[in-house]
Image 1 (tube, rainbow, N blue to C red):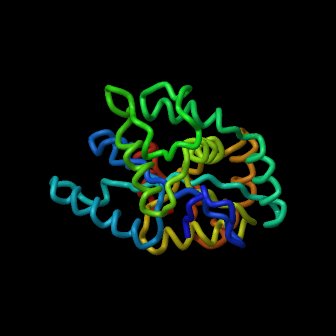
Image 2: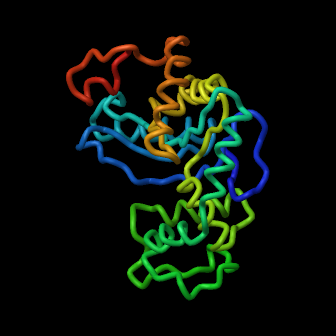
Image 3: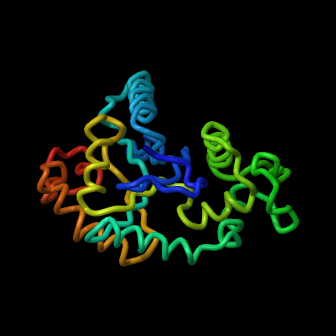
Length: 235
C-alpha cells in the first residue's frame, strides 16, 4: 500500500506515499531499537522475522529488539480536509529544499548538476555517501518501483516527505492502516513524524490516539519507569 510518491496520483482513502527504506538504526547494545521506513506489509513482515533471527543468533531474545517504522501522518476530521491540508503543505515545498537534504546524503555539492538528470546517474561525493545506507536505499527503492525520478523530482519528494511513507485521511482511516501493519507483525510500534510542528502531532494525539485506544491497541497509561521498560509493555 506504500506507493512511490514520485508518481503524481494519490490512492483514494488513506494516502501512503514514499516507501523509501532507511537503515539508520540505534544498535541493540543501546536499547534494541531499529528505525526504518516501511515498504509494505509482506516485505516488512519478512524483514521483522529476519531481524529477530539475527538477534537470536547473537544470543539475545527477540523481545530485546523493537522495530519502529517512521510514518508521516496528516490527519483531520475528514478525509477531504486531510487531503486539502496535505496539498497545502506540499505546495510550500520546493526542489531547492530537497536538494539540501540530497546533497547531505550524497556528500557533495549538487548546485551544478542539471535537475533533469536521473537520480541514479548523479555521482556521489569522492568520499562516498554519508549516513548508514541512506543513499543506497533511496536509489534502490526507486529502481525497484520505477521509473527512476530525476534529481528535481527526488528533491521535491524529499522536501515534502523526507522520503518517508505518508498516511493522509481521517482518524479511522489512519488507525485502520496502522492497525493492519501492527497486527500483521510488520512492526512493534511506530515513530510518527510530522510535516507541521507542533500542530501535526497534536492532531494525531487528539484524533488518532483515542481511536487506537478504543480498539485496545494503544495503552492508556504507562506501567514502567523507563523508556526501555515501556517499549514492550502490554498495556
